[in-house]
Image 1 (cartoon, rainbow, N blue to C red):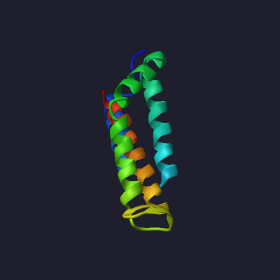
Image 2: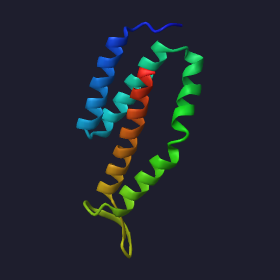
Image 3: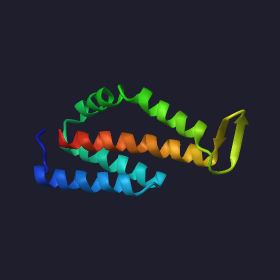
Length: 116
């Protein structure tokens, strides 16, 4: 199935979604943008090929996602402390930022996937 959207439209949508991902740090906004990007990818490509492409794009980045998330969780000092062991602290803010950063990276990879 060929692309149903004009290339300029896809560029504008990708620009708007990537701007929203960078500006808004809300987890629900990040998940909403993931859903929108997945819907646009499904409309643009063959539905069977979408999951093979997504897994191919994202499988190389899972270690980076987990590493960044763990670093944010362990070394973020703000917020209420959930667990502490010497210099390592797990705080609510650290967990929030870890999840947000990982979702942002996933969003940016999905949005770039709209362009190719």
